[in-house]
Length: 109
Length: 115
Image (cartoon, rainbow over all chains, first blue to last red; front, side, top):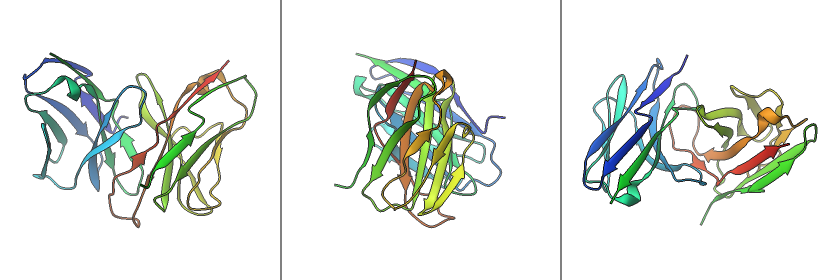
């Protein structure tokens, strides 16, 4: 049973075309929800941590939000350099992270 | 700057051989993790450690082992490499005592091919 489900699997955007990625989770006691960015051939790079429903975090063109059942990563006016795979992970009772399969974003100029 | 490094970056080995992947972090983090990443599965936890001499099994631990003799290193050993263990392996570390959700930082990965 998957704890973390990300959608869509892939997203192709035109430069400047804003969109959102979804991460839904089924853990009972969420300690934290994390967003990472991963470029091809590299390790995941930390973006945000969200702790409680209603919380929002922003970084440049990215904004992450959290509800009791899901998180959204909004990409506003994306640029080609925002092309990457975005990973969502949840931490339940200890320091282990459970990851979703990721959303691969491609932004065309 | 503090960092986490993995070695080697690429490794080809034969079925049945023992292989050890190294992970070294200079943040003095208590928590260290090994994940594997495969298409269609995302990142799956292999083993993890909360401190020196502490090790725990993750969801895909069969055929793997780890040992933690100091804070900085968590080597991952494949006891007898199998083709199913061809994957990209990531090491990660995080700070903090239990109960606080803190971000984990990842190494650059080791691409292992078992032939």
